[in-house]
Image (cartoon, rainbow, N blue to C red; front, side, top):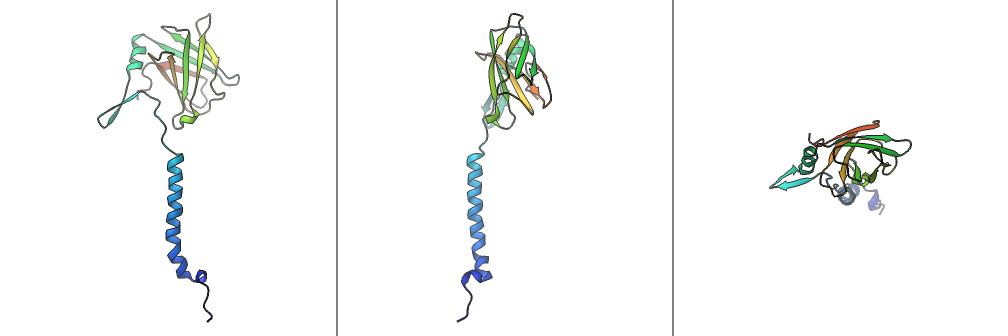
Length: 164
């Protein structure tokens, strides 16, 4: 008999390739599902029925106190300076929240100086790309929000800035 081996027959490959491709695609999908889970939302959100609503209580508290501020970034030096109008606690928590990747979020405390400004190190060094900047006291009873563009060196903070 001079028949060819099974792997030299085109119909054998026609039968085996679809199930093999399905197994490979299933493993790839499983790996994507395990490694690419959605990040936790950084905003204050509450679920009402089947609807997620933005909770603005802390931003409303900042607005009631008449708070607003300005952040100046010294990207080369890795420093930030914050001026705050209104109530001035000793220290503030500054968070840089990445819009798509929670692993890239950064936070740090800034200390009030004698002249009333807050200074501290830029959390995590260089901040490149779009970020949301959240400033709040350590007890987190109010919050100011601002947006940071890729090249910006100054960020205006206000209560309710995250509402869009």
